[in-house]
Image (cartoon, rainbow, N blue to C red; front, side, top):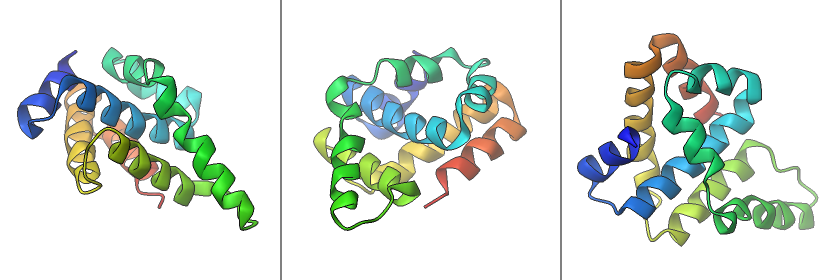
Length: 130
């Protein structure tokens, strides 16, 4: 997987961390964009869909845990919960929360190289909905 290799090389993370971190970020983007728009972006870079699809179940449940926490306080999950879920997922992967931005930059550049500026801007907008 080209994106995973890029993350490993540039950030010095393990393969599991690269796959998990990218999967969490891309799932967040897919949730914000919707299936159709995300499919348009990922059609040029199959790594993206694969990383979301292969996200380990333990990392996928992070959002459910965050959603429960927010419901206790009577709040809707929204993008804040999504960002919190990514942060929690990164911590479970043994990555500092500061790594999220580094992952995002590499993913955005990867998408630009594979799918162009429009896809990058769309993905960037989805990720900045905090």
